[in-house]
Image (cartoon, rainbow, N blue to C red; front, side, top):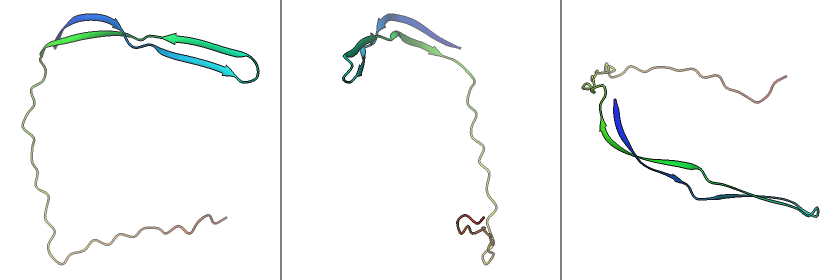
Amino acid sequence: MNHAVVEEHALDAKVLIFKKKRRKNYRRTKGHRQELTKLRIIDIQGIQKSEPVVTKKPSKAPGTLKVVYKPVSYGRIC
């Protein structure tokens, strides 16, 4: 559970949208201001993190190799 307090409601900076169609005398300007809410986090409660479990990977014996075959593509064949 998180606890927060609303500090203020505000408006972001204005973003201007300008549309124009050349040689048609068409110009439109529109503005937009996004609403913002500033929060102050007081307390954060939740699931306690457990210690990570470390697992050992089996080591390969010296002298053993893994052979991997990959298909080779020579472009598009129709």
